Length: 292
Image (cartoon, rainbow, N blue to C red; front, side, top):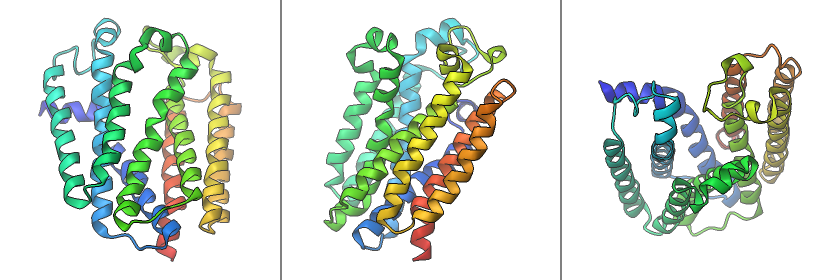
């Protein structure tokens, strides 16, 4: 029961699950359209489960990184209030790694190399690249270095298709990964934009750092950057117009909330980012593959 409570609070499976499924399925579908090789169903399973576990590992790594700050400023969270322990979470982390490794070995042993790269970057993130204080003093550098994990995980997901096939996806993969990186910024900024009344002591947010008006404009800029790279990626698979229209409409929706930033509720930015992410991965990979 306490683990069910933990997931509801810290890693809500019914919220993250559909987004991760869209994320990983899009990677497989986009790779298939780049290479012309139809995807096999096991590639979706391997990519989906592995990606979900990657994001769980990111959450667990944060629990360790933020343990001291959580105990001081956020005692209501699961670890400081004793719902679960760091030791228990450490074992969950280890088991998740074993599952990822076994799936890679059984499906395509060469995937272990890509998996090891993702693990290495995750490990460096977990120790703040051995420069915690330096990074904390430079929030923009902190942001982009940590968001690089998004295209790395996405690269693994695409590799679940093209690597076993012995194919090379080409330049389109670069545009796709760039869109994934920018979308990571959209998600990260979106969940850390708050009205002054919703700010908490000891909780770093971009609205506190830059002010909500400026931070929301930066967030909008990340949406536009994502749209640009997604459109370039869509052009490679000849699906430009649907991607441009769907993302363009969502940018207009986001602009409404940015322009009325003084009245926009804190959770609205996160909601828009979630809908945006789902639309991005549906239109860039899953829908065009189905239509073909």
